[in-house]
Length: 94
Image (cartoon, rainbow, N blue to C red; front, side, top):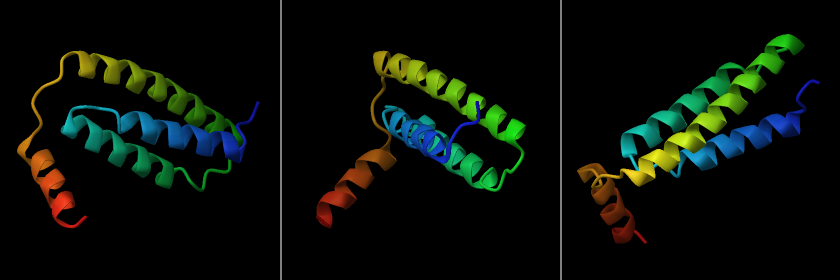
């Protein structure tokens, strides 16, 4: 079955949502950049088989991210200095 446009957008939103749950700044930002890049790059795919393969890969990636987020939260570390500065910056302009 070919994934519909709505299914693909739903997958994209879920990938972004799950990636934002990562406690580690570096993993979180890398995942967000990678997801956005991959979806932009494959935006113009026309071949149904390629679309199906990319969708399946996205589903696998989503499951991997979910598992990694759980593990990351079990063994979390202190926030990086950039994260604390971002929080302060947002407070100053709120």
